[in-house]
Amino acid sequence: MAKILDGRTAAAQVRSEVASVVAGLRERGVPVRLDVILVGDDPASITYVASKERDSEEVGIESRVHRFSAGVSQKELSGLVGRLNEDTAVSGFFIQLPLPEELDSMPLISSITPAKDVDGLSPESAGRLAVGLPSLLPCTPHGVIQLLKRNGIDLSGREAVVVGRSNLVGKPLAQLLLRENATVTVCHSRTRGLPEVTRRADILVVAAGKREMIGAEHVGEGAVVVDVGIHRKEDGGLVGDVRFDEVDQRASWISPVPGGVGPMTRAMLLHNTVVAARMSLGS
Ligand code: NDP
Image (cartoon, rainbow, N blue to C red; front, side, top):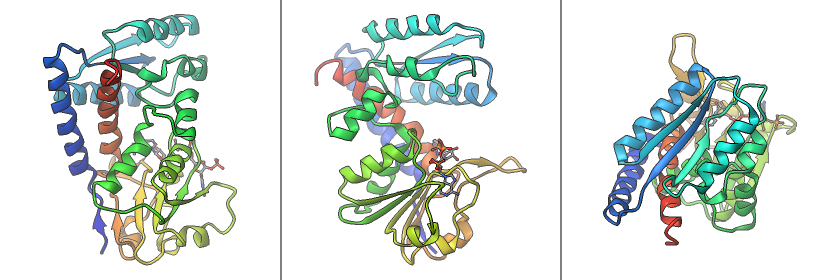
């Protein structure tokens, strides 16, 4: 049986580190505030935003939610992004995605100033990551790297295979793994012979968004397997992109769903908020 990459424990460490930085900044009179733009009444988005507010409160970060009905105009949102960029009381902010179909998220995300882009999803943040300039890192891929490092898993020189090439997870994760000196292969829906490719991995990260698609045949003996996928089961529970019970028999480490990458993603948003608050001081 594989050892568990326990995201709850690692996320608790991150939160406690963040809480002590927040306390220090507050002592120096530095505001630490995370703002969220929430549009429409998608229940999942409302739940995510509520949990991010709770997380913020727990570590002493002030949070504000800017709520809009689905009929809000692009111009109004764009105006708010401009104001939040300028507001020195706001350390960082993000737009809860997805936006209703009538709205175009990309121009809005692109206009977030990189120093406040706590989701790390703007093209400028992505470009800075790609060329090795300091930037706020996308929360899920950064959470994956932290989960590995905090469990003592060495990445340098190792074969890393990422399944998925989204802007949200796969691509930035590949950049981060490269930065850690892993040898990186990125797979996607047109990859031929996926099991042969993934079996080469020392570190296999799966972010395909396909329920339980990865089984024992995809995993080399002793590999480290990180499951980013999240799917709601019929009984209400959660399951990932990996068939846990099978892969558990072959892997040396495996991240569970729930309790793996999910808590890390949430913790890294808090981390980014304090990084942004510090950056506002030039430190
Ligand atoms: P996307 O749907 O944007 O991307 C999925 C990627 O997987 C695409 O690049 C796609 O290839 C690739 N893919 C799909 N099917 C296959 C296949 N059969 N073989 C190989 N590659 C395949 O998803 P996201 O990146 O946004 O999210 C991935 C998963 O992670 C989802 O389950 C999502 O819910 C979850 N997630 C979890 C988070 C967490 O905190 N734990 C945070 C964010 C996401 P192609 O490009 O060719 O279409």
